[in-house]
View 1: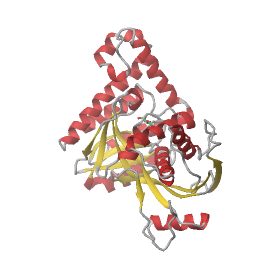
View 2: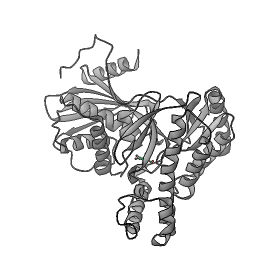
View 3: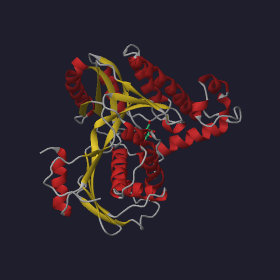
View 4: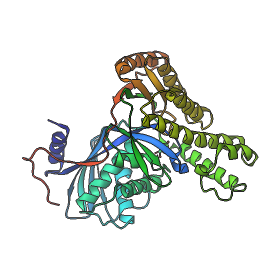
Length: 395
Ligand code: GLA
């Protein structure tokens, strides 16, 4: 049985009908960390792990949600969503329902089956995957269509306001717009993007430190607030700046006295990271791998020392990766404080890399790490059920 068959069978045994299934992927960010909420540049790719959401409309206004991961059922009325979540897994789909209704999309009650395969708390954006797949499903069940960028923005709003994590737009955007075999260079101010083919000899290898991160834990929101404070202070010298995107390293050095030492380092990370994203994008455009190593190392160092979002396990994983054969670059990826590293590895060395990094990390740090050799994948989609014998719900 393929994945959709299995999911349809599970849906039917739980809810007694057929369903339409939607899929949205997690992501790995190649470079451009903590730049999205500063109107900067990012270079993520959608990955082969997705969240799958099956939906069948109901005649009342109830959402009945079942999570396969938590083996738990939740029932909430569409008119009783409130304005904040409660720290529960259902906050993500319910937050999206809330954001969609706030934006004027009238939704229908529905039975919903959620199966997430993006590792949770690994910094691979299981949250964007559930938001986007749920959003797509809820809209389709109520016969709405939506532009992908608008869906990404509403999912971001759900996470910012309903869930309470003040994330940028990167994860939801790439989960909506991802393209197989490509990374996306996104300008997070204009939301324009370009697809960039990954150099043919490069494999994307993701190494999971097995240390769970939790964005709601607060440090992420603290970093974001620090950037906003720095912009307010720097505006005294440059009244036209709207975000750190508008500040150069030269201007920052010139007006260092306006900032505390910590704020200065936060800004130096964001501004220098934007420069590195452009450089890596140029290299990809030319199909080159020279200099990737230095740029990835500089990004990791800057996140570790200036932005202070790395941890001992991430540093160890990057250091171990750097010693392997066929590595074009390694750094932490995502929000930080645990989670994963992203490694560019020569295709021919990827399996050997996977084996030796796992062994070295386990003996140095403790847990056996999960290491995934990934392909850049396609963004959100309706997954056609191939089993015609199951009744389809009319929509
Ligand atoms: C998390 C957020 C993103 C981005 C990254 C850091 O993944 O969801 O918006 O800020 O952290 O680059």
